[in-house]
Image (cartoon, rainbow, N blue to C red):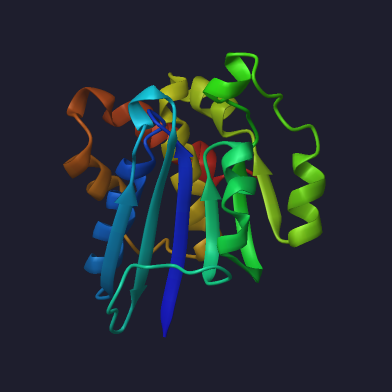
Length: 190
């Protein structure tokens, strides 16, 4: 059986780093794991997506519409943008924050006001987490991605993997303490 996770955000939020940490964890647990990433205009605040598929035997990291078991979004509009990928019985974990895309910042569009309604019309399995605020408590808003990782580990029941050891191997040492705090804040979020 395959498990499919879609992570979405905007450039600079650390979506790809969290995806790589997850893949290392799944591999260490003995799963076959595949990941693909798309980060076209990421450096200009554009969408970043990663697709992770893991299980006993995985042939492709591709996630089609309606296939994702989990949608992890580092920004609320990105969650809605990729909602069609989620299995209607799947779960969504969203950083309850907004980052206005370029068309909104340029005055060519408005940031949608009905995002919560759209999310809850699609699935009841929505968890909003104030990850950016928790990351600031840990030392920097840049640790939002690791707060989200902590919550994801809790939701998926993946405590038997040494996530902090994996973070040590993938994050510069000077950021370890802050990211460990961020992970714990995300994991303990109610």
